Image 1 (cartoon, protein in one colour):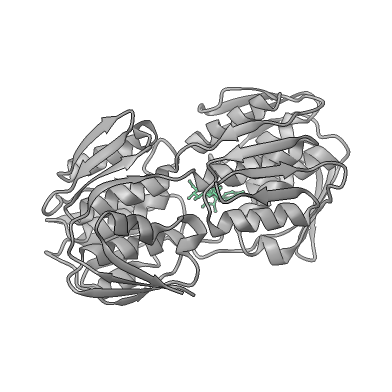
Image 2: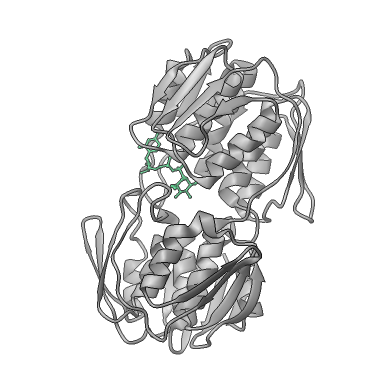
Length: 417
Ligand code: UD1
């Protein structure tokens, strides 16, 4: 377990780079087992979730190798196996994303049910319903999903909700299916477009990525590919909010403004100054933000992953803000911790009512999940005095060297293993 100690009150200044997107890299790694050829993925962040996905792929008999320069090479030739065990899948829910590629490539899969997680029950019913429509017989016995089919068949797949994971699992399964698959109410996140670009380079036939209807014509075989992962919009948003909450002025080099449009608009509403250039995004935080209301929604709506960070920022706003969480039912676990730092936040169902206070005060806090951990860190940066953030391995799941980046921007933060 690592612990972060922060002496708050220093406005951040300077420039920092954003790393490759976790939520894209993990899916491209899974997609690499759709071919017998070698795939090379660049700009992969060195984070715990990537290490877990490497373990999953190696356990499946693929050869996945991570180089310190952020390049992953994956080769899944004849030795590919169909079993992803509970020990690995329970460490990271995103491992369920190997289900579609395994079914597509081997015609069978034996993948542990992932179970709940800290931000909600996170069902996979839509993943399974979609794959069933493609002819997969799915049974869930003894905690494992068993899918047996032979070759998948294309189908019309209407999703009840634009689930990122379900869209991705179906996309990858459909890439090698026989015939046409149409995903209706598909997720439109930039990471979906990234996965489709990767599949297109592998030789897949797909159109409509980035819209609510994606059409996939299945092909017989896919080939190896080299690809560079897009910048992580959630890490970029985290750093922007770190700059804003401290009233500092920082540049996030490599951040893509188009992927953060609503977040930037909301920051401007609070009184932050934003300037965009092809090289990145610069933010100047206000002395004290104005209160605003925000509701999380699938892309292009406000990202749920930045909701806890926004709450930390709005905790010191002038006036009352209402944050509504529409994607995950249990994403307010950090509120009691923020309140221990002097925030005044009350929960009413899926709404958090944030009465802004003039300032936060440093305190020992415990991290409930990945993005809440980042929220507590930035609250500590703005708080008066010392904050100790007790993590249990959450922050390293999704951020590469967050403490070092913040230090480069002038933050007084130390991390101890
Ligand atoms: C992905 C991201 C996560 C982000 C989320 C929403 C990764 C590794 N994670 O998670 O960081 O917060 O998108 O942008 O890419 N649901 C069901 N049944 C299903 C699938 C989903 O009920 O079969 C529900 C979930 O419980 C959740 C909501 O739909 O309440 C959204 O989930 P989804 O979009 O699938 O998120 P993930 O792919 O798990």
